[in-house]
Amino acid sequence: MGSAQVLCATKLGVGGQRGQDDPPMTGTDGRGEVAARLKEAQAAGVGLDVTIRPSRTDQLAATALAKDARPDASERPRALPRITIDRRLAEELPGDAEVVSGADLELVGVLGEGGMGVVYVAEQHSLARQVALKVPRRDATRAEARALVQEGVIAGQLEHPGIVPVHALGLDDEGRPALVMKLIDGVTWSELLEKENHPGWEGWPGTAADRRPGHLEILARVCDAMRFAHSRGVVHRDLKPQNILIGGFGDVYVADWGVAIPMGEGVSENLCGTLGYMAPEMACGDAVDERTDVYLLGAILHEVLTGQIRHDARTAAEAIELAVASTAYAYVEDDASLGAIANRACHLDPGRRYHSVVAFRDALLADERHAASRRLLETARGRVAQAQALARLDRPDEAKRRAFERASIEARFGLDQAREQWPDNPDVAPLEQDLDGLLEAQRRRAAELEELAHQRDRSVGAKQRLQAMVLLSTIAVALSLAGVFVVDELTTARLFYFGLVVLAAISLVVARWRRQIAANAFSRQVLAIIFVYCAFMVLHRWSAMQVGTPPAEVVTRDALMAAAVLTLGGVVVARWVFTIGLLFTVASALMLFRPAWAVIIYAITSALGVVIGTVLVWREQGAPPRTHAPIP
Image 1: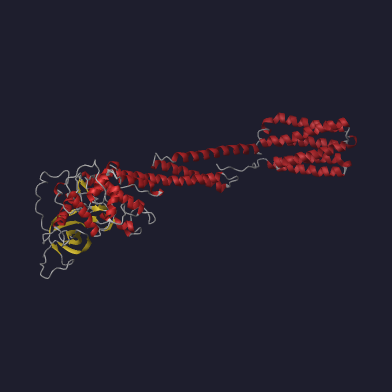
Image 2: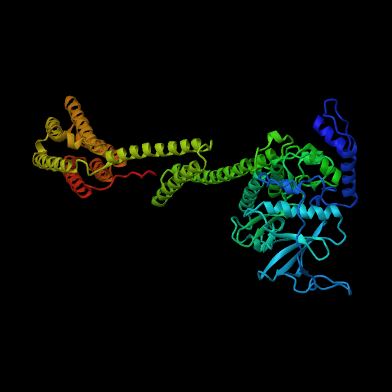
């Protein structure tokens, strides 16, 4: 236990020894007073959310709280004016009590009752309105009566939209203080904390499933009111949800200034505030300043996050010990960022807290922006994951391609919005890199497939390819007819020369239209099939001529070779090539079955194959390539 904590424990009588380096205490009266006050609270069973009020108030210079107090503020205060009250409707008067006739305030009902006073709803006849009237309880002590006067003086000096306005302060017909305030038509913040579906939530951000946005906005409004109070040199010391009033039109008021005190005052002889929220310097009886209220605001934020008060204990003494220790709370991961704000605001060392309520509020607002950025980032992360899954599809259809485009656009928009909300969000850049890498990979893939589509595009060089096929058809038909007419005189040498003519014709076609015909892979593959077959045919016929192979056997082998090459071409290049390959396959079977007709069958098949190829080329020119469009 540190020296400050030892001193607190010694003052409060809750155990511990005073350290050698602790500052000297001015006698034992303060220790005894605070310890007695704590015992009194324990004996009375004071709850952790109930305000403990000072036992002595004569040291509070209520009329000198404001920084800009008038020169005569320290002088003896003037006598309070009389406030006339008609109590007939709200109180049972003794039979011999005198009714105040013509009273300006007429009690309508009890609004609330606390340990120090009672708050009534009163009809103010002079202004035809209802007001709140706070008076001491009938059994109140003089100190409690003086506390009510001080509360009125303090609150009366704090004219701010977020602080309950004071209309008048005076004495009733029995000489008791009476404080007239604005009647707030609303609920306490504690009621909204307890009920997510409370009607008072209407108009506030958030939903019944998540009221945190509304709570944070209320907390920011309280910070604005306390900023003004601190500018006037006043510390509230009892900020808690029960003392925050929520009006029906989005208005927020800080109420109950009964334990407020000037900044910097030491109050070692008084234990006051609410145990469940109390700052360590309040428990220790040390001087308070705006950072004390920052602590209380942090305790409220803790309650918003956890649903529990900050010093959740079984007894008052345990609550005091928790306040004196003020250890950091371990929040769940979802509350980590706001939890860090609450822990800093509730730090044991005031110098480690936010230096002002403005700094605390700014941290809340910054976290709200960061939270919005994180939510946008998570949505963008989901869109990136969706786009990545779609990009892995081998054959995406049009719907999948549109879904990829939509996911990519939404991911980019979400990342831009997340960066706009929080320019320094460290998680935006890595996800941007993932998205950029994905889109770049898709662009490269699209370019590759576009090039592949071009290479497989049958419309490229189609005109020249058709002209070449017509020329080859003419030559093939002429040679076939010549072969049929000279079939009896046909030799292997003549077959070889026929082959050379065909090969020469193909070479002339290539030389004439080489750029157009060889403009893409499809045209080159068609040309390669024809050229390779003709070249092997000429080579085969030359070798057959050398060994004296009969013409029938030569053309049968040519037909088998053509069937094999063209069937393979039908699989690799185009289906119409497969059709011609099938024709040569049938012809080969006939030639093997009828060798005597082999030359005629081969001649007819060759001419018919070239003509069929020419017709199919003409019909299929401009047909789309057989490729699968990528996701762009």
